[in-house]
Amino acid sequence: MANKNSKTPKLQNSKLETPMTASPAPTPEAVTGNVVEVTVEGSNYKFSPSTINAKKGDTVRLTFKSVGGIHDLTLDEFEVQTSQLGDGEEEEVEFVADKAGTFEFYCAVANHKAMGMVGKLLISN
Ligand SMILES: [Cu+2]
Picture 1 (cartoon, rainbow, N blue to C red):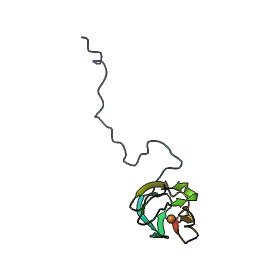
Picture 2 (picture 1 turned 180 degrees about the vertical axis):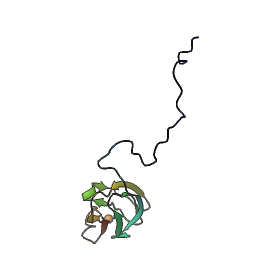
Picture 3 (picture 1 turned 135 degrees about the vertical axis):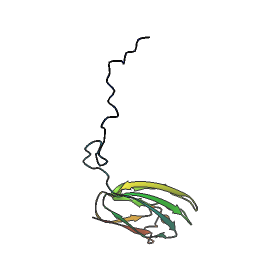
Picture 4 (picture 1 turned 30 degrees about the horizontal axis):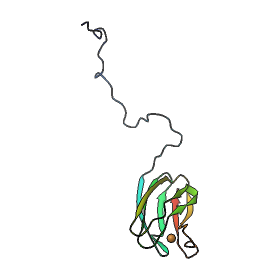
């Protein structure tokens, strides 16, 4: 068998110091923030905690858990809606907090929102 690679210079280890900060590709909407993990419990008829804080650019990894009754967590502005969860069930949703402001989340089951099952997502710049 002939050695086909005999003419190829091997320069691999000479000077390949890649700067740690180099980005692989220019991504206009790169996710630069942190991952914020938060667990919200839903019961009749409230969320706990009822306020979630994040910074613009953060990825919010939200675990919604029902601790009594059937509930979901709906956050229209970020197209988030969990399944309707029964007592003891939980579901994780994830979204990027890509705009600052105060956003309302609520339970879309029956009249729960009207019963006060709402919360706030505060995204700061
Ligand atoms: Cu509910």
